[in-house]
Length: 160
Image (cartoon, rainbow, N blue to C red):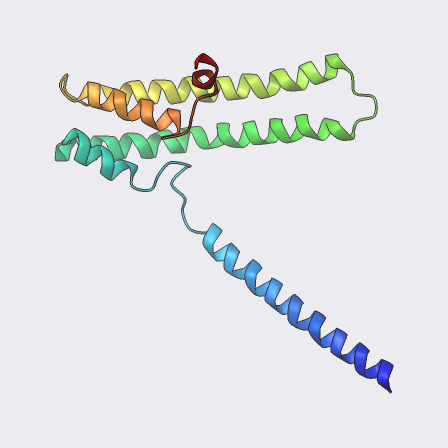
């Protein structure tokens, strides 16, 4: 009788735990279904508008360019992710050698390099919508964005 009671309590606790875990998973999926801002701060466009004192036309041009850019690079993000997955799947390959590792590494590099070139051209094109007076501010915002805002650079630490 005592064993049955302990088992019943254990089953009920496990059932409650599973229900809680399922609830967290469902709530997390709802959050991940929201449109993300492609890894950048959600308020980045507003910061640009305010900091650079963008005109309505500049804002419209920027929005259009940004949407076109993300449509264009989405397949590249996907291909980089697939190439990296294949590269790191090599961990399971017992016959892994340096040549094979180099082949897979180059695949990742080529895809990432293409993505970086397209992104650089996008930022150059966006820069062209600004006046000569606004461009230094844009350059400064880009520098802050790429430096990770407040993160210390390992090269800066070595120089000290």
